[in-house]
Image (cartoon, rainbow, N blue to C red; front, side, top):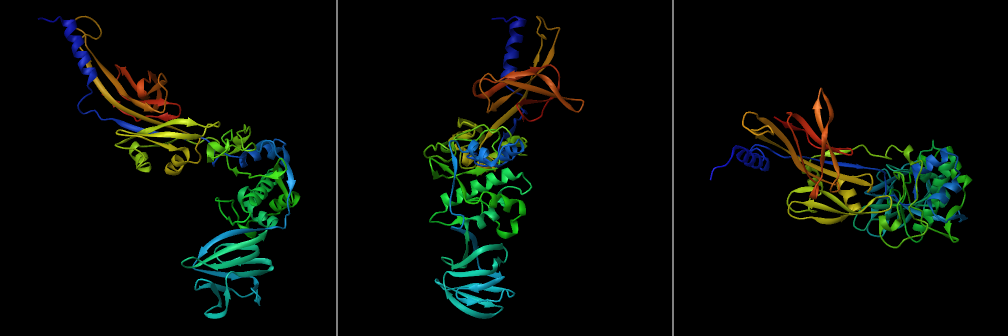
Length: 455
């Protein structure tokens, strides 16, 4: 059977379009964009700054972030215990008393472990005394300096570690503790009302999470840097809110806070799991944009690099991330880590940890592109006298909806300019053709695909 020229040309076109050139190689980019910094529940510290700059007082700020709450009071002299860390030995100065023994505040002493239940006190190489743990050390003027850590009000307690070394705990009155927390959590240069809101939230968090247990001096509880962090402005905020706490229906409640909301906080159950709490619900955060992390600059890396960070969460080669459920804000609750031979479901917290994200309010786009070329002998017309070369970009985008419009950009005159659009199909697949050779890429939102040379 004899074929006509147009039929033969059509067959050739189809065959060449279906198969990219033998030396064509796919290239990929993995782009992360997002907003916020922290877990997203409760009071945004930068949001509180923005509200204070717009005339809100501390009471109004706290009522905004902790829905349905009012202010109550607690004993500001009650003691809290703060773990300062573990160490092989402890150097202390400014101490006036260890247990019942008087000390010289001008001398530096060393505390060392002595078995499982005792500690030794030394000056230089001389052992001064042995004490049954915990050894309590009080400072001159109420302040003791712990070498390598800082100076602290109240009492320092030293106990042998479970297997080695020492653990140090600061037992301190609540509002003295807050003087070392507020400037560690919020810059002392911020407006007084923002610092007062921080003081009340921190005080409430301490008494609701530290009862019968020991707080940490870092973000596992709240930052605490002792006397060295204190400033007149932050101490004023503590003094002016003396004993004030956040209450819901008359009872102090856990007051989570964090750096930056991105514009909306999150329901507590969406971030931490468990049951909803009526005072920890998502709210708009209108002035959080004062934060440098209100929106992130895009981070782009290769799929291989992202895959190394997510190793063990997919099978085969890493392809990208598909978010399957978001919260109100919209922080990620669950997502699929996609591999060429298998995927797995993970939490937003897992992605944040693995990828080193500021927050779980994140978006991911994987753009894979490969070049293709075919020759159309007819140039789109009947007959062999006309011919043209057609080039194509093909690939997929993980992280966009089916039907989404993708921008095609061309590199011309040292700049990227618009060259057309493509449509995302099933599983984000796309194809775009041109008769003009050059360097092209796919773009969607703030994500940019790899530069591909079509020649």
